Length: 332
Ligand code: AHM
Ligand code: MG
Image (cartoon, rainbow, N blue to C red):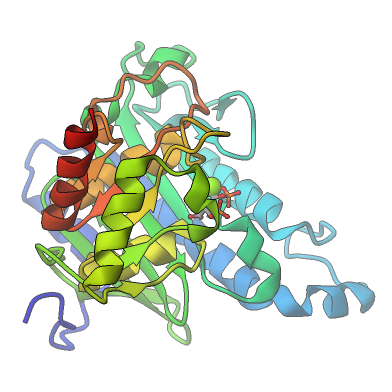
């Protein structure tokens, strides 16, 4: 079947990246290095996430993190780790993070890439030991190399992403990414400190029986969303909602399903952020054969105007997303 675990051939992320790079004779290796930087920061954050419940105990023992700094809140810590890795790596000239209002210049003006990132998504799940994630999106800069990056580097539009992915800190930690040639997933082996290729070519099932949304906002959802969900229930489908976007998305990617963060009366653009949530997950789902829509068009076609703008998100199996949209079209 699809999406099954690969034979244990032991392909590490490192080897995989090298092999892929060799397929593009003109590649300079900078994007490869950028992916390595992200994986490295992911390993560090994974370690912090695993110790999360112990931080107050460790703190009371007067311990500090490896940099000699007092322990931070985990989302702040993750932000620091990713920015540090991207700065040290040298390929990214600037970073946009959910944690900071403005873009962060790394000082690497020669860097060809910019990265938009949600360093630790699922903030409500951090303190209760539930899966959380990191989401990232990479663009080749449009401003001249040698200068500081500008807003236009980040506001190019989702279709110009050169790579995107996420790290899921779950019962296992996984890194899943695309560079526009399909989607590959890697599972972290703690004792070896390596990501191993476990899901070589992820394709989302065309349909599924899972719907994922926060039903607490039911009365604020558009009528077409309520009708769609009502039909899901009539068919006896399963409601599954972790409340961590990466976890809900990853489950649906592997098993088939739809994730919904609709517009609500209070938040007509929903809650999720376009540049480091909607765009990367939309790019990746299309690469896996799925769809990502806002209700009025593909997520990737939204023209970004603000770093932190929001967008509704309906993402998952193509048949399910199409069925939701059919209702939306009828409602018009
Ligand atoms: P965060 O960036 O503050 O962590 O919020 C994003 C999270 C997503 O991971 C999740 O899907 C969504 O917010 C849940 O929101 P809600 O509690 O409104 O259902
Ligand atoms: Mg977030």
